[in-house]
Length: 396
Image 1: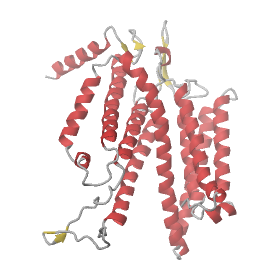
Image 2: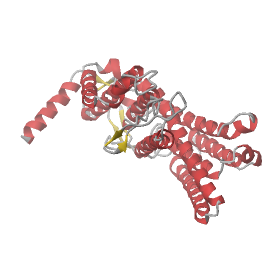
Image 3: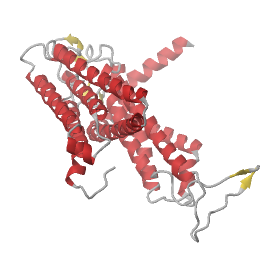
Image 4: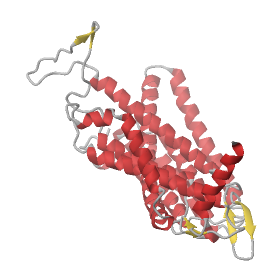
């Protein structure tokens, strides 16, 4: 049975590879293993199917604001049919020729990946803001352990950031010829230093009391990660980018393999961990909001409280009677961006319209990640400066 399965797998792979281009790439014998490219192509198709499903759900759920809306049943139920639809879309995408689908998905994936990086950053800053506010409040109430915890974690984040910058200089700037990497590290290090100084300025502390070094240290660490991820996506060079390995040469071209065996790179693994961690945190935010604001007796339009019906001796109520717990459409839109971001991460950010000689090199990915790091620092700086400029508005 195992032999038959192996032969069947080989037949499927050969059928997908024979006489065709994959991801806009023509395959020649002795270059890139066909199985590897089929795997990348499959990731694109599956994630594209998820994005299509979430986009359709986003359109269906537009303006759904109360549980009485019939569409709420679609949001909260029909899971069997939803799974069937996703499977059906996934199967259908495999009938679309690679040369017509994959190059377009690469471009869309880069754009959506950039947007999702910003979404991740906003969620991360929100998490650290709440963390800082909670521990500062407890510290002001006399809890020394929370005050010491703030100092400890702030120092730890800065230590990791500084150590990472040193490692980046060792592995990516070992010679003066690595000018682009030198520019990236220098600019982002200076920007991180600037936002750290801004966060403790007296005027900022006056109008934005929750601002502090804990947030700045976390933003610094996240920026250093984006810098590392960007430099790891540059063209392979034994001096300026030692993360690229397995350079195989033949008479026709040079085949580049960033991880040696086609697996997900270290930076991609870290990115996925951050992604799933923040998705879990986003779900926790919704749950906390629901608990604090919805799980109470809801006043009726005449000013009296709606009495929840009793079932089995306990009160039952509709926690979305007046408004839904979260924006359904916005939720699905975020999942659209997340689907494309995961697609790009699992495939190590392929370059749009790439060819065999530059299979995993991506100038687009480099600049997307670097620009996103600058944008993240800009957004964080604005959250500190805006209350000082527009003093009559409440930003907290």
